Image (cartoon, rainbow, N blue to C red; front, side):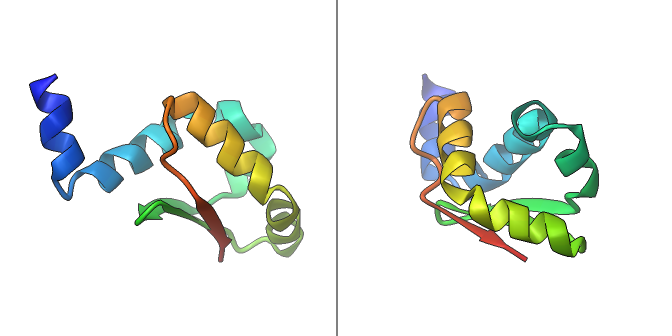
Length: 86
């Protein structure tokens, strides 16, 4: 509990969540999407997903709500409110 309280107040929280999301990304989104996703990071409850594959960007844009729902469910809290695809 003490560690959780520390992380909730520290600036490490987003970094740790990013690592958690990266570790479950393939399970949540599938192997193909995971393979072509270059970077995942969180800044102030916004998930940034970076990919250089045009069709994948379009697909991810259409799936924003599903991505938010799946990640929040997997983390067990409302960690993500918005998704931005780069």
